[in-house]
Image 1 (cartoon, helix red, strand yellow):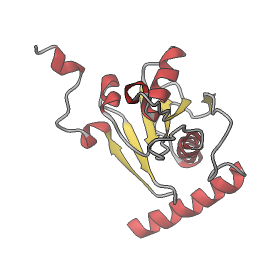
Image 2: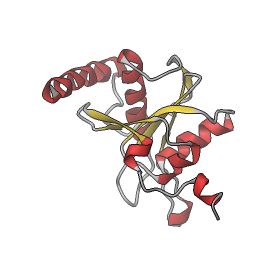
Image 3: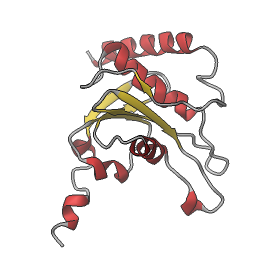
Length: 166
């Protein structure tokens, strides 16, 4: 069954690349703005494919001259908007920004603080600041992905609720 799912995901990924045209593999030059395109709730079908595609489009905008490791993320709000982000490196490493932070900060700057899902290639603890009860889609360039609840990925993490215990 897993192989069937992965094959279907690969087919969908190829369709997405064809629809998106040039830019899926090369270094993109256009920012990916927030788009109200996914209905509230867990993304499925074409909406899920859009969320995954937006994470890869954002990856193409990454600025990573030091690590040479581009990362993209696409964040789905409970209202159905998608905010994407990429990593932005700086010679002063502490000033760099990961893709997840970029997407979350874009969403917050537009007044959104409640999220349903995020499609990313790497996961960091910043996501915990907004709860653990949401889906994370871990994607690969070949179109395969797995879905996990944030609490499954980081079961022994330290988050805002731990600060209340101090």
